[in-house]
Image (cartoon, rainbow, N blue to C red; front, top):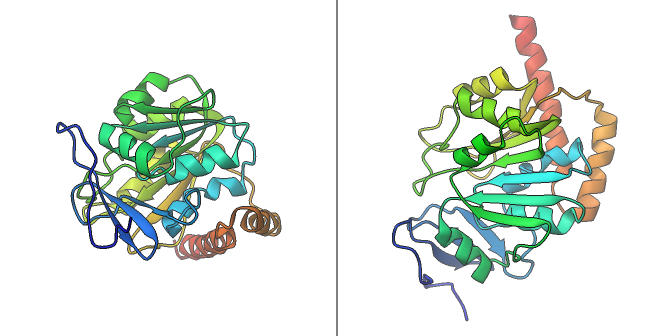
Length: 263
């Protein structure tokens, strides 16, 4: 059945924003009752990450190859959760999503696997979950893409929240976060991250305003020759645009060096 000119909804909990779907050029998009796209899936390759900014959320792969525990705050269309589940068979994957309608639609339509001994999709408030994990130092990778249905600004981006995130992570944990929305303040979000993490970098803006930042609990040594080799391996094995990530990091480092000299 084609979804091209219609919106389909499943039976949903009325206490939460309704999930709707549209299809365009072979990509099934998830919405929360508005025109804003909250995630997408290529119908011909459901486990592929479609959007560039979502691919950028995987940039931690340049620095860590075998994480034990990957946590996703905000399920979206399940792209990151599915990709991590299929690409890292030795990792535990946890996804936190407040809206039960998102979970049910992802399971019914977006090929999200059922929970098993490696995958846990939990209906919960992301902040409550992070608070419950404080001081456990259990999360190797934390991916944050949290927005309301209008996608105006990140739901949580305070110093307090990022401190809790850091406290929940392993000593060499890596956080990626998408900063997007007309009401978002990138400078403030980056500043809050820098207060809580040893090093923070960011990639080139893509997909109409999405900017992904990468925060390290322990600043890595950056060897661009090694990073480019790792990026090529990632590109070859996963189809992710990993070489672009290294290009962006190189540009970021050059621009940061210039700003330091000017100051």
